[in-house]
Amino acid sequence: LPLLRDKHVFVAKKGGDDGDAQDSDGDNADIGPGPDPIWDEVIACRAKGEADLAITKAGDEKNVDPALWYCRHVNNLKLRMPPGVLTQLPSEISQLMSLTTLIVSNNALKQLPEELVSLQYMKNLEFTDNAVESLPDGMGDLEHLEVVDACRNKLTSVEPLKGLANLVTLKLDQNKIKSLSLSYKKLTRLGTLSASHNEISSLDEKMGRLGALTSLNLSNNNLAQIPCELGDLSEKVLHHLNLDDNPLKDHKAKKILEKGRAPIKELLAHLRKEAESGKGKKKKGKKQE
Image 1 (cartoon, rainbow, N blue to C red):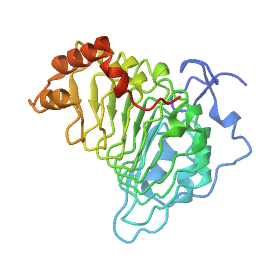
Image 2: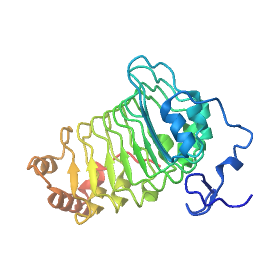
Image 3: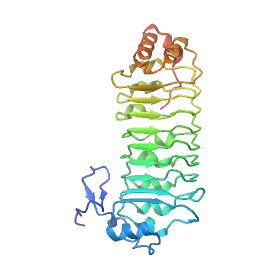
Image 4: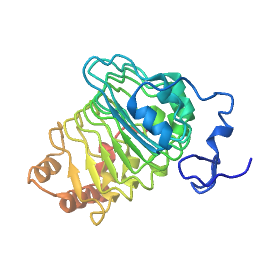
């Protein structure tokens, strides 16, 4: 098929750059145009070929317009339904092959569909303030994913995120996560990691390899120790650190953190000293893959 230059209708070749774009209809040629749209927003989007679609519904709206899932040219979709209405996303979401941003925050989602992993060009996924308990197993295959904001859900594990290598921002605050099982050596671009108000009891020593990390928030967890390998983080890069309200056993580290704003340089120096003295060997977090 010939290449299309319309910026609103594309699918990048798998494993290629964003510039290697093809017509997404080639992958969905057998789907057809779908039902006639009901919502004004969908009518306008399809008529004008708009790449951005933001929909917020209130009142007695009970169902999503089925035609929404046939807007295959949309790159950025934001959908918010009235409280309690949107409890799941349909499998038809897989038809939105051009999607790079999906924002479904402030709904009542209990899970994310497995079909989500077919959206291979997703860069930004936000589903804050829902009731999602687990992530699709194949999420690690979303190789272009840069932003995941899953705050205020019911997640207990982030294991499906281990395959991701291009994450820049990962927000997991106010869930029920017990372990940050991530492939830290792959996360060379991760700048923000926030997982406050969870149930994390130990940290992987490999977290010290996050050379691009500028902000780390692990406050309000169950951390008793800080692995000395976190001293490998650079105070020139790390500008925000919050480990408040953890039951730390390292009294000196706890005293440093109680000083208030930005004790980063002093804390990292303390962790390096602990590592050099060998005391930190007793304080390593549980090793993870």
